[in-house]
Image (tube, rainbow, N blue to C red; front, side, top):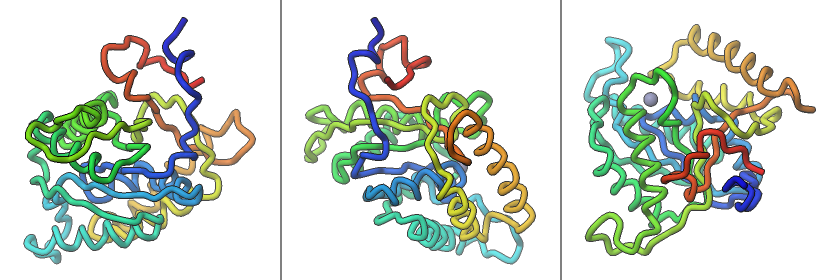
Length: 251
Ligand SMILES: [Zn+2]
């Protein structure tokens, strides 16, 4: 018998409160804009947690270095609101400098314990060849926060109340175990990316549009809909000590 057989059948679209964690402003739209729009259409309340300040994202001599953090917050909120995101929290860690998983996990757990989501999204920490430490550290810290926020005193010294997350979902994953029908929302992922004018040229947006449309078509090839989005979902119970998590197929 596998652990998955003993667990409930999870319906990601029935989740009512969703926390989307992103290492940098724009990762959520690039990695999961269609999924976020779909969750919004299904009635979820959605909150963004942006971990770093995005201060390394200066791509043009026309953008003053001292303005980039504020510009990226405006872009985050414009694109997030377009997708149906209701609230925004920023940890303002320095872009490109994340290294301490346990310390960041404590900060993310505080947000989980105050927002109290059913579902938490983050990039997949085990994406092969992912070389950006901000992504790896954010994803591992979010995972640790998800399994630890139900402890009475986590982080140590906190006065917040424990909270149990129902489900973790990883975007930007190479090993999806659910495919979501995003036929009606894929186009909103592209529109949301357009709000990040400081990051994406028209040429890059056009390339992304072709690539992600192709990828979404491939993911739906065996389905009765046009476009699919892949997520790796795990119940928190499976995220510690269980050997089956890698191959887990939600029943
Ligand atoms: Zn990023």
